[in-house]
Amino acid sequence: MEQNFEEAVVWFKKAAEQGHEFAQYNLGFCYENGNGVEQDSANAYIWYRKSAEQGCAPGQYMIGQCYEKGIGVPVNIQEAKKWYQKAADQKFEDAMAALLRLEESEESEPDKQTQ
Image (tube, rainbow, N blue to C red; front, top):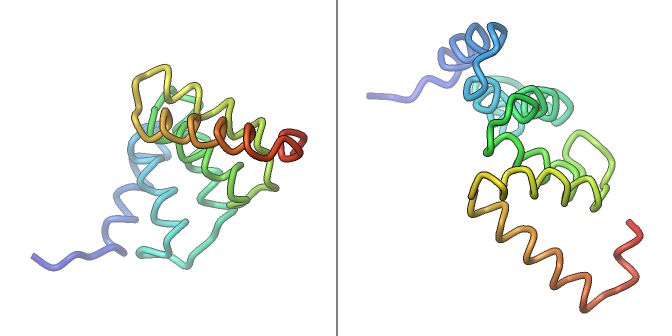
């Protein structure tokens, strides 16, 4: 079966607008990567944030990524760590790894702590 991202986005959007956290996360992913929609970092952040605020660990992790990498928002390492921690608290392994990586980076480059 051929993937149809345009069709997927239609259904993700319907579910996301009704508050489904994983649909919000998936819609954010589509906007971030330009799958079925024009790539739009600001919209990716908005949908990831909606998902994250509902407690969706993958959404929380992606908000951390947005703040760490400047996807749709300015880089803010402290904010990234806050969102990674929320996902890590739910045992989301990628978030735990991101926290460890940032901690190790801060230990080797203390000047980056102020970002």
